[in-house]
Amino acid sequence: MQMKIVKFIGYLFFFLSTLTASAQDENKDSTSRVEVSSQKGLELKSYSQMQKGLKAYAEYNKLAPNSELFFILIPRSKKLSLEGVTMRLASDETSINIPIDADGKFQLPDIALKHEDEYDLILNKLKGQFHFVAHVKSENLAKDVKRMGDLRLECQVRWAIEKQDVSVVFSSFVKLFAAGNPCTKTISVYFFAPDGMNTVTLDTPKLKSVYKVNEKRQYTLPLSNADIIDDDILQYTSNIASTVK
Image (cartoon, rainbow, N blue to C red):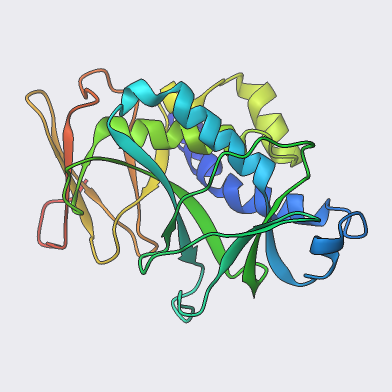
């Protein structure tokens, strides 16, 4: 029973990102901002909430000191593509274009805010079509390789963004389990593999495991395992013949 609860916590943590976006959109005062009120129906995200992830990246940077923080824009349906998608940071007075590469990656500037709701991150697409994931990558690594420390830092960025979720479910989860930061607990947390990859191999002196990537590009790893150090390498492959855990 205890193991089922632990796994449930991990799955809940991943899905909170979608709940957070929905709750924040519904609670915005659409009449308080000239820029936002003219964008009804478009995908809006709170920049101040995303900025918490930038702060967490700086705070926990020792996990991946030679890395960069990106976010990746991912379509919620295979019928959607990134073609024609644009993004900008908008306030009442300013609009800043945010470039998105062919893989959906983008970076956000860390702007000093006059007030919390000064900026919104706006896509030129309808609500609910895309979602964001944090992406930390150490330098000089191939696309199909990643450090464990990169993933641990990604988790800290996600936690900083998602822990302020206003949903009753999330608040109850935090109070009931008193779990604190899930990135340091023995729970499974979802991560995203590069497009086209379907297995992740972790091969260390103390542990060798192959993890399956599901149809949504997700896989889970035991972040808190002390036998896995930050410099341990994960290899993404498209070899479905591997033995999978």
